[in-house]
Each structure stands twice: as C-alpha cells, then as structure tokens.
Length: 233
Image (cartoon, rainbow, N blue to C red; front, side, top):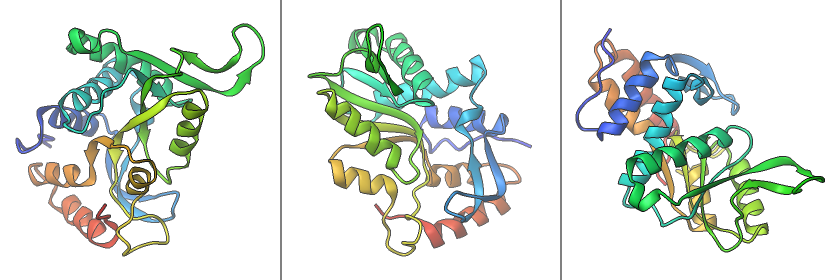
C-alpha cells in the first residue's frame, strides 16, 4: 500500500507523515483516549526511539521552527522531563545543522522532576533561563497541564516563555466541552499569549489520506471524528 502524501502539504510535513505511517507511529483503527473518546487514529511519539526515526522527528521540529511565520525569536529550547529532554537536545543540534548563522548559538535546557540537592543543585539542567526567551518543545498537548507546569518553572527561573512547539495538534475540543470549539492548545494560546506551533494537525492527516491509496475509509472516519469533536480555535 502506498503511503505517499499529497503535494499540497509542506515538504517537511510530507516527509514526516510518510515516516510516521511507514513506521506505524501513526495508526488508524479504534483507540480509546484518556478522555475515553473513541478515536479513529493514534499517534505514538514515544516510538521515535531509533536513530533514524529520532532524526526524522527532530528534523521536522527544526524545519517547522525555521519555516513558520509564527516562530518567535528565542534563545533556548526547553524540553520538559521526560519526553521533552531528547527532543530539545536533538532539535537544537538539527537547527544548527540547517541554519548555523541563525541558530548556531541556540541553547537547550530541561528540568528535573525532583530538585538536586548536591553538586550544582537546582531544578534546571543546561543553559540558565534567567533573562532568556524560551521556546518549549514537547510531543503533544492533551489537557495542557504539563505545559502550564513547564511555563511556571521557566518563569520561576526568570525566563520568558515565547512559544511552544509540539509534534501533533489533534485540534479537538476539551473533554466534556463538545460543541464549544475550545481546544487545549487554544486555551494555552489565550491564557499565556504565545504561539503554539505543530508539525502536524488533524487536518494535515486528513489531507494526507486524500492522496493515500486505500485510505478512503480511514479518511471518512477521520472526517466524521472532526465533525463531532473538532475545535475551531
């Protein structure tokens, strides 16, 4: 079965989608989410654990940051523990490879789940956050709780959160608020006044299915899911 994606998507999105489909990271079927919704698709960012797959993921993060008109100027890429740690480190490296002039001095930081009381101590590993413009990188936004905790930690350390980037924006309404059009990412945008970028959205996946041989039934179920739970913000 072909997993080619249509040319209407940006090249980095096309490449990332193809990799995700071929590796079984993006799957179609029936999946129960934490919200207890029955979703027709599932994206497991934790499966990017080989060198080739991790390179695909961090390249997509880097290209999204470089190409998006919403990307703010930032000094540090911050990865919340635990999944965000390798994402921040590897994406900083990829940014410098793709654009040494603009991103050669970009730093990374991440937090500890528990403060260290010996050695250098503290909650933060990597570049100090005080007085710096900080971009958060993570896999997904579910309810937004983890991102709020990260923002609080960064602000406590004296950093300024200027944006967030995730791998997937499901663009669906908050649990229990079907029909409101409000999403977790939309709430974060409004609450903190920062852009939230995403490599992929649910709309991108539906677009990809339009050009995928044998994907008609999956696309139909995705469209029905979007009609029922899709967010407008």
